[in-house]
Length: 184
Image (cartoon, rainbow, N blue to C red; front, side):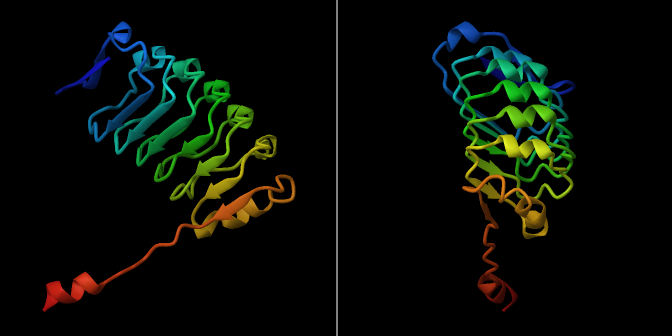
């Protein structure tokens, strides 16, 4: 897989899946003009970790994402224009960790989300617009949800149905010591 950047069409992919038959970890970071995720990536079925971060113009993940059946970690962080996840994400039965933090345009966790029966950790920090579905109760292995304090109440309703669930709010250490040295 070779990812290149072109001026008009953003990031494009030249199909070379056979060149990396054993690739298990792929990170795509700061591909600032990528609007559409290259569906060819979904042909690399040995992937265990896929991280797509800071791709601010990314609108959607392709339906073919469901082909990544060996995926254990999916990170879609700071993709601020990502509006939704497709039902095919529910085919990722080996997912253990899902991070959709800072996807501020994400509106709903789709029905297929309830099929992620092996998920253990879910990071949804700065996804205040994201609507939770009752299908969350199907996630019997979910242990940790990391979210903002503003949405902890919406998760607390699931604690009785998911007795091992821990809801955590990341501590933000606001340290303004550096500010004093700059302003002096």
